[in-house]
Image 1 (tube, rainbow, N blue to C red):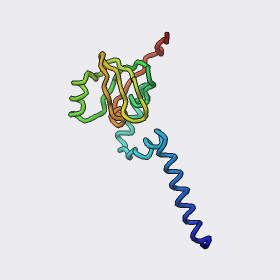
Image 2 (image 1 turned 180 degrees about the vertical axis):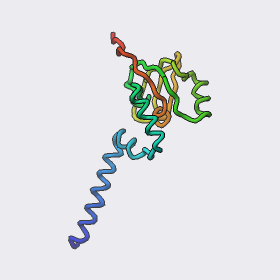
Image 3 (image 1 turned 120 degrees about the horizontal axis):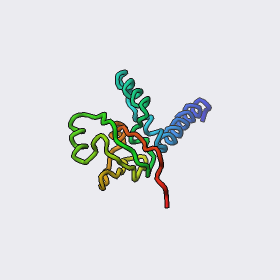
Image 4 (image 1 turned 90 degrees about the vertical axis):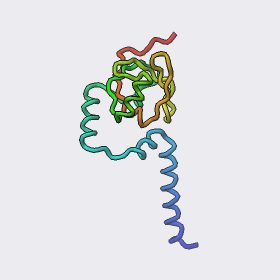
Length: 132
C-alpha cells in the first residue's frame, strides 16, 4: 500500500482516538453537548455567577446549598415545586457520577437530569459539614 493511503487513514484514526478520549470524560461530554446560548442568556448567567451563585451541576457532593434561582420553563417550575425544590430550600448533592444527579431535599431524594441541574442555581453554605 502506498503512503498516500496511510496518511489519511492515520488522520482519521487520530481524530477518532481524540474524540473517544474526549467523550470518556464528563467535561468533554458537557463541552460537546453544549448548545450556543443567546446573548441575553449568557448575560443572565454572568449576572448569576457575579452574585456568587453556581449551577447545581457544579455543586460539590455532600455540601449543603440553598436553591436560589430556577432558570427553567414554567411547566418545569411547576414540577420542581411539587418535588419540594422551591427557592430558599436547602439541598445536598448525594450522588454525582456525571449523569443524572441524586439530590437530598426536605428528607427525600430526587433524581435530576444534568441539563436541568445546569439551570438550577444555588448558593453554597459557608462551612463544609464536619465529618465524624
